[in-house]
Image (cartoon, rainbow, N blue to C red):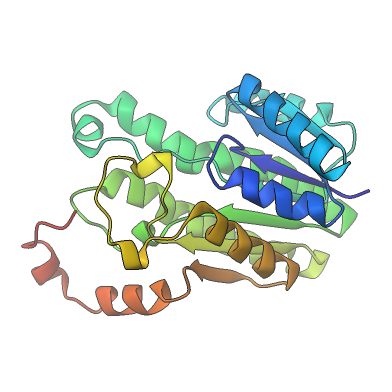
Length: 244
Protein backbone atom coordinates (compact mmCIF):
# COMPACT_ATOMS: atom_id res chain seq x y z
CA UNK A 1 0.00 0.00 0.00
CA UNK A 2 1.20 3.51 -0.83
CA UNK A 3 0.83 6.21 1.82
CA UNK A 4 0.15 9.92 1.52
CA UNK A 5 1.43 12.22 4.28
CA UNK A 6 -0.59 15.40 4.77
CA UNK A 7 1.34 18.14 6.60
CA UNK A 8 -1.02 20.72 8.07
CA UNK A 9 -3.85 18.21 8.25
CA UNK A 10 -5.86 20.58 10.43
CA UNK A 11 -6.51 22.62 7.29
CA UNK A 12 -10.07 22.69 5.95
CA UNK A 13 -8.75 21.27 2.67
CA UNK A 14 -7.18 18.24 4.37
CA UNK A 15 -10.29 16.16 5.05
CA UNK A 16 -11.78 16.21 1.51
CA UNK A 17 -8.31 15.65 0.08
CA UNK A 18 -7.66 12.71 2.42
CA UNK A 19 -11.02 11.24 1.38
CA UNK A 20 -10.03 11.38 -2.29
CA UNK A 21 -6.75 9.57 -1.69
CA UNK A 22 -8.28 7.03 0.70
CA UNK A 23 -11.04 6.29 -1.81
CA UNK A 24 -8.28 5.57 -4.36
CA UNK A 25 -6.61 3.07 -2.04
CA UNK A 26 -3.87 5.14 -0.42
CA UNK A 27 -3.10 4.87 3.27
CA UNK A 28 -3.21 8.22 5.05
CA UNK A 29 -0.85 9.92 7.50
CA UNK A 30 -2.33 13.05 9.07
CA UNK A 31 0.13 15.43 10.72
CA UNK A 32 -0.68 18.65 12.55
CA UNK A 33 -0.66 20.30 15.98
CA UNK A 34 -4.19 19.31 17.04
CA UNK A 35 -3.83 15.59 17.70
CA UNK A 36 -7.37 15.23 19.11
CA UNK A 37 -8.93 16.42 15.84
CA UNK A 38 -6.55 14.29 13.80
CA UNK A 39 -7.43 11.16 15.78
CA UNK A 40 -11.11 11.74 15.03
CA UNK A 41 -10.38 12.30 11.34
CA UNK A 42 -8.15 9.23 11.13
CA UNK A 43 -10.81 7.03 12.74
CA UNK A 44 -13.42 8.43 10.37
CA UNK A 45 -11.23 7.60 7.35
CA UNK A 46 -10.62 4.05 8.61
CA UNK A 47 -14.34 3.40 9.05
CA UNK A 48 -15.43 5.16 5.89
CA UNK A 49 -12.91 3.64 3.46
CA UNK A 50 -11.56 0.56 5.27
CA UNK A 51 -8.04 1.88 4.79
CA UNK A 52 -5.08 2.55 7.09
CA UNK A 53 -5.07 6.06 8.56
CA UNK A 54 -2.80 7.39 11.30
CA UNK A 55 -2.58 10.67 13.20
CA UNK A 56 0.66 12.33 14.28
CA UNK A 57 1.27 15.45 16.32
CA UNK A 58 3.54 17.69 14.28
CA UNK A 59 4.53 21.34 14.52
CA UNK A 60 5.98 22.64 11.27
CA UNK A 61 7.76 25.47 13.11
CA UNK A 62 9.67 23.04 15.39
CA UNK A 63 12.27 22.16 12.81
CA UNK A 64 14.51 20.31 15.25
CA UNK A 65 11.88 17.56 15.53
CA UNK A 66 11.33 17.02 11.80
CA UNK A 67 13.88 14.28 11.15
CA UNK A 68 12.74 12.27 14.18
CA UNK A 69 9.12 12.64 13.06
CA UNK A 70 9.87 11.41 9.54
CA UNK A 71 11.95 8.51 10.85
CA UNK A 72 9.04 7.45 13.10
CA UNK A 73 6.64 6.78 10.22
CA UNK A 74 6.06 3.01 9.94
CA UNK A 75 6.31 3.15 6.15
CA UNK A 76 7.80 6.05 4.24
CA UNK A 77 5.14 7.88 2.22
CA UNK A 78 4.87 7.82 -1.53
CA UNK A 79 3.68 11.41 -1.48
CA UNK A 80 3.69 14.42 0.83
CA UNK A 81 1.16 17.24 0.64
CA UNK A 82 1.95 20.51 2.46
CA UNK A 83 -1.18 22.37 3.52
CA UNK A 84 0.31 24.10 6.57
CA UNK A 85 -0.08 27.84 6.58
CA UNK A 86 -1.19 30.88 8.52
CA UNK A 87 -2.32 34.27 7.24
CA UNK A 88 -1.28 36.13 10.38
CA UNK A 89 -2.13 39.78 10.93
CA UNK A 90 -0.11 42.24 8.88
CA UNK A 91 -0.13 45.04 11.46
CA UNK A 92 1.04 42.70 14.21
CA UNK A 93 3.77 41.40 11.95
CA UNK A 94 4.90 44.96 11.15
CA UNK A 95 5.15 45.89 14.83
CA UNK A 96 6.47 42.65 16.33
CA UNK A 97 9.04 40.49 14.59
CA UNK A 98 8.03 37.38 16.57
CA UNK A 99 4.62 37.57 14.86
CA UNK A 100 6.27 38.00 11.48
CA UNK A 101 8.61 35.11 12.18
CA UNK A 102 5.69 32.80 13.00
CA UNK A 103 4.09 33.63 9.63
CA UNK A 104 7.39 33.08 7.81
CA UNK A 105 8.22 29.85 9.64
CA UNK A 106 4.75 28.36 9.11
CA UNK A 107 4.46 29.29 5.45
CA UNK A 108 8.08 28.91 4.38
CA UNK A 109 10.97 27.99 6.69
CA UNK A 110 9.29 25.05 8.40
CA UNK A 111 8.09 23.64 5.09
CA UNK A 112 11.57 23.90 3.61
CA UNK A 113 12.86 21.93 6.60
CA UNK A 114 10.46 18.98 6.32
CA UNK A 115 10.58 18.93 2.51
CA UNK A 116 14.38 18.86 2.57
CA UNK A 117 14.09 15.58 4.49
CA UNK A 118 11.32 14.21 2.28
CA UNK A 119 13.05 15.19 -0.96
CA UNK A 120 16.26 13.40 0.00
CA UNK A 121 14.31 10.21 0.71
CA UNK A 122 12.23 10.32 -2.48
CA UNK A 123 15.30 11.17 -4.54
CA UNK A 124 17.04 8.05 -3.30
CA UNK A 125 13.95 5.91 -3.94
CA UNK A 126 13.39 7.54 -7.35
CA UNK A 127 9.62 7.71 -6.95
CA UNK A 128 6.85 9.72 -5.38
CA UNK A 129 5.39 13.19 -5.30
CA UNK A 130 5.53 16.43 -3.34
CA UNK A 131 2.60 18.85 -3.39
CA UNK A 132 3.05 22.35 -1.99
CA UNK A 133 0.10 24.70 -1.55
CA UNK A 134 1.34 28.24 -2.06
CA UNK A 135 -0.90 31.22 -2.91
CA UNK A 136 -1.64 33.78 -5.58
CA UNK A 137 -0.73 36.33 -2.89
CA UNK A 138 2.93 35.47 -3.46
CA UNK A 139 2.91 36.76 -7.02
CA UNK A 140 2.91 40.48 -6.18
CA UNK A 141 3.38 42.38 -2.93
CA UNK A 142 0.57 44.41 -1.39
CA UNK A 143 0.75 46.51 1.76
CA UNK A 144 -2.13 44.57 3.33
CA UNK A 145 -0.34 41.19 3.53
CA UNK A 146 3.26 41.43 2.33
CA UNK A 147 4.71 39.35 5.17
CA UNK A 148 2.45 36.41 4.32
CA UNK A 149 2.85 37.04 0.59
CA UNK A 150 6.65 37.13 0.75
CA UNK A 151 6.71 33.77 2.56
CA UNK A 152 4.46 32.28 -0.11
CA UNK A 153 6.65 33.77 -2.85
CA UNK A 154 9.66 32.12 -1.28
CA UNK A 155 7.84 28.80 -1.04
CA UNK A 156 6.84 28.97 -4.71
CA UNK A 157 10.46 29.58 -5.73
CA UNK A 158 11.66 26.77 -3.47
CA UNK A 159 9.20 24.34 -5.06
CA UNK A 160 10.28 25.41 -8.54
CA UNK A 161 13.91 24.67 -7.77
CA UNK A 162 13.02 21.41 -6.07
CA UNK A 163 11.02 20.35 -9.13
CA UNK A 164 14.09 20.87 -11.31
CA UNK A 165 16.32 18.99 -8.86
CA UNK A 166 14.03 15.96 -8.60
CA UNK A 167 13.02 15.70 -12.25
CA UNK A 168 15.70 13.16 -13.15
CA UNK A 169 14.73 11.08 -10.10
CA UNK A 170 11.15 10.78 -11.39
CA UNK A 171 9.69 12.64 -8.40
CA UNK A 172 6.77 14.95 -9.20
CA UNK A 173 6.70 18.36 -7.52
CA UNK A 174 3.36 20.14 -7.86
CA UNK A 175 2.85 23.79 -6.92
CA UNK A 176 -0.74 24.82 -6.16
CA UNK A 177 -1.73 28.48 -6.27
CA UNK A 178 -5.20 28.91 -4.77
CA UNK A 179 -7.06 32.19 -4.75
CA UNK A 180 -9.72 32.88 -2.14
CA UNK A 181 -10.98 29.76 -0.32
CA UNK A 182 -13.86 29.56 2.16
CA UNK A 183 -11.82 28.33 5.13
CA UNK A 184 -11.31 29.32 8.74
CA UNK A 185 -8.11 31.13 7.67
CA UNK A 186 -10.17 33.94 6.12
CA UNK A 187 -13.21 33.63 8.37
CA UNK A 188 -14.80 37.04 8.88
CA UNK A 189 -13.19 38.55 5.79
CA UNK A 190 -15.27 39.61 2.83
CA UNK A 191 -14.36 37.88 -0.44
CA UNK A 192 -16.04 37.99 -3.86
CA UNK A 193 -18.34 34.97 -3.97
CA UNK A 194 -17.94 34.21 -7.64
CA UNK A 195 -14.15 33.79 -7.41
CA UNK A 196 -14.04 32.14 -3.97
CA UNK A 197 -13.60 28.37 -4.02
CA UNK A 198 -14.76 25.81 -1.49
CA UNK A 199 -12.35 23.44 0.24
CA UNK A 200 -13.86 20.54 -1.71
CA UNK A 201 -13.20 22.28 -5.03
CA UNK A 202 -9.56 22.95 -4.20
CA UNK A 203 -9.09 19.39 -2.93
CA UNK A 204 -10.44 18.02 -6.21
CA UNK A 205 -8.13 20.30 -8.20
CA UNK A 206 -5.09 19.18 -6.19
CA UNK A 207 -5.92 15.49 -6.50
CA UNK A 208 -6.58 15.68 -10.25
CA UNK A 209 -3.41 17.67 -10.90
CA UNK A 210 -1.22 15.34 -8.86
CA UNK A 211 -2.66 12.22 -10.43
CA UNK A 212 -2.12 13.62 -13.93
CA UNK A 213 1.50 14.60 -13.22
CA UNK A 214 1.19 18.38 -13.50
CA UNK A 215 3.81 20.83 -12.26
CA UNK A 216 1.73 23.90 -11.47
CA UNK A 217 -1.95 24.81 -11.17
CA UNK A 218 -4.20 27.66 -10.12
CA UNK A 219 -7.34 26.87 -8.15
CA UNK A 220 -9.82 27.95 -9.38
CA UNK A 221 -8.39 27.86 -12.91
CA UNK A 222 -9.38 31.43 -13.80
CA UNK A 223 -6.96 32.85 -11.20
CA UNK A 224 -4.26 32.37 -13.83
CA UNK A 225 -5.85 35.17 -15.87
CA UNK A 226 -6.75 37.32 -12.87
CA UNK A 227 -3.12 37.28 -11.72
CA UNK A 228 -1.83 37.86 -15.25
CA UNK A 229 -3.89 41.05 -15.42
CA UNK A 230 -2.94 42.10 -11.88
CA UNK A 231 0.79 41.68 -12.51
CA UNK A 232 0.52 43.97 -15.53
CA UNK A 233 -0.57 46.90 -13.35
CA UNK A 234 2.49 49.10 -12.71
CA UNK A 235 3.69 49.31 -9.11
CA UNK A 236 3.47 53.09 -9.36
CA UNK A 237 -0.30 52.58 -9.46
CA UNK A 238 -0.48 49.62 -7.05
CA UNK A 239 1.21 51.57 -4.24
CA UNK A 240 -1.49 54.26 -4.40
CA UNK A 241 -4.36 51.79 -4.12
CA UNK A 242 -5.78 50.58 -0.79
CA UNK A 243 -5.79 46.93 -1.79
CA UNK A 244 -7.06 44.44 0.79
